[in-house]
Amino acid sequence: MNNDKTGILTMCRKAGKLVMGMDMVKQACNEGSARAVFTASDISEKSLKEARFVCAKNEIPLYRLDMTMDAIWYGLGKKLGIMAMTDAGFAKSCAKGLEQIKTDKSEFDL
Image (cartoon, rainbow, N blue to C red; front, side, top):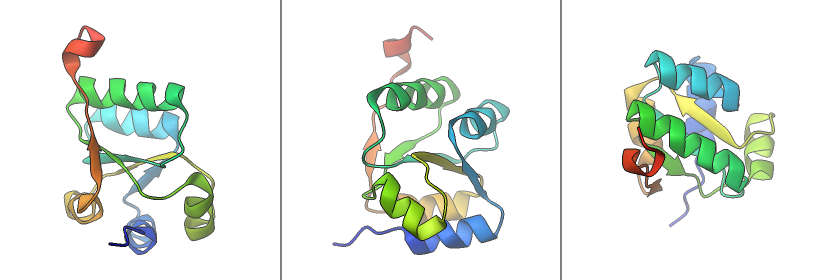
């Protein structure tokens, strides 16, 4: 099964419901506007740990896209490893068929 999510990411971005980059994603999570967070398949371990922490703290699902940062760059025109969707419908559609990354509050002493 092909899990290329370029189409849904593009529609979400055009609708203004895609938050891109670590700082903006953390802000959206902390404000409660993020419905789901998505990472590139080749995100660094440090960035992944930071994403897992903010998602665990705010109880937001975290998913790994089957796309590299270069594939996201090609599809969206912006090189990034993490993004959040602020619309529940887009988030549910994009999450379909993806691996959910475990985010456990106890791991971070929250």
